[in-house]
Image (cartoon, rainbow, N blue to C red; front, side, top):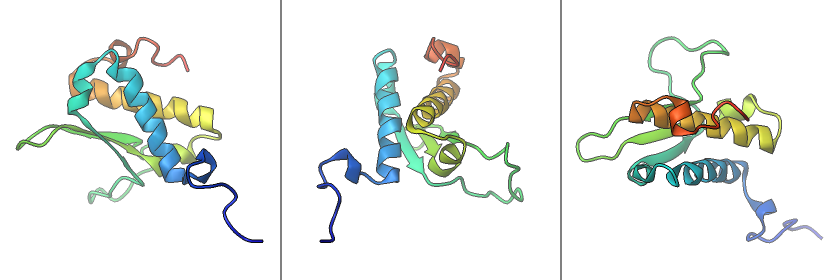
Length: 125
């Protein structure tokens, strides 16, 4: 008999992209308790960063995230790049820690703060 291993409502059925988006959302929710103004920021997950004509990146220079400041009535955005983060991590716990680190760094950049101010536990994971 062929068919899905688990019904769609079971976490097993979540795609890698959905599971990654959940990690980003978990990180945002952790930070929103301390920084309610994050509700005004859009958090996005993209597969990979776009090349902007610079000719590419070395392995160490591929960005894991980025920010887009608010303008023209559009909210600020924090972007986390899924594939570069996945490539640098081995398991879910390691991936969750790196996602949180990237989100904290990008939020800090948008707010003009240090990552340690945004999350006092930054760097401890």
